[in-house]
Length: 258
Image (cartoon, rainbow, N blue to C red; front, top):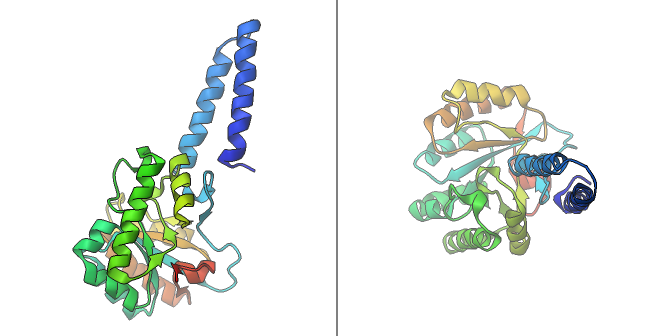
């Protein structure tokens, strides 16, 4: 019910009623302003919480998980830190899902191939990961998705069905583009904040305090502090008898088009 396509007509209906009442009665225009501001506050909040699926359905955790399985995901790679991540995953017999940036695949094509060869899943994280991503129109977002898809296919000979928007930003333009691409939007239930927090221990503690079976965890394979947190997390998961699987396995989704 609380989705953009349902809320939008309600907003405009109330807005026009308030506008008419403002013109033909003594109703203060302040009410019209307040209603408009509230609507845009909802849009802003929904744009930065991918779990809400406000603009487009987001797959972000398995609420019905019956066993102790979680999915660790990595954004923004591959990078010079990815080999360390792979070594840790291999040591703990853990599988993960990597949302790759097209231009990073071009820098590290062999790492992208290694990810796939070692049984990890691959997702699209746009071609350039633009800082202006939230301000791109639908055509520009689709171009970012398609360009990354082209690089993935050229390098790995496959078409991923998974897309994760940079910064987790969603809006009407992103929704239109993802529908046009036919992708599935993958979110997360635990945001580690490893690009914000300064210390690996803080990142690790933030994750385990929220951890439940069925969770999708967001990390980045782009820094030493994230690797520190990953090492402690994998050790904790092993001791607590958790299994780390790919997103497609946890959420029962098909990762690639064949």
